[in-house]
Length: 237
Image (cartoon, rainbow, N blue to C red; front, side):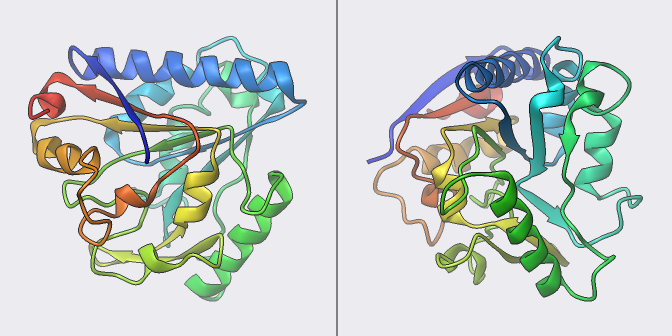
């Protein structure tokens, strides 16, 4: 059974600071043990603040590989591109710009299916293990219980025999890591912010909750899951 360790933050600024410090500590730990560190990051406005802070941390970034847990099938210059957001935050001028960023191939390929396969090949080369093992997996939590692009009522949450798949949600095709890869990470961190996430967070930590309704429940790593939540999100616990 997955154990959730919940750490509360006072507000969004404190949440961003705690997330930045936690990810930095995990990178340090990984690089003490291995030559390189692989981290998978989520998109969205909540982690963007944390990435701006993280990018200023004095770490051996040239030994860090950064990928996204999911990406919309849009060009990198689209406002909705997670890759674009990372380039404006973590990878903007500062120490973090030295990290090796491996964006998800999107519209430069002929189809979402081709992008998903190229992404699977990419992470298999970057990471050891089958499924590929990331040192840090930072995840968001949707108010509908989705994480990455594993949306309830779609096919993506049920894909267990591949490392990537196509997630379809909110009118866009998305390329996403699958539940086996999310669960293989050495440290999984959920970052949850806002009163609108209270119900989803309560369902996430409820051992009786169905993964069909709350696909984030499919993330079941061997280690404790760390949940960083602000006071508004955690108020329902």
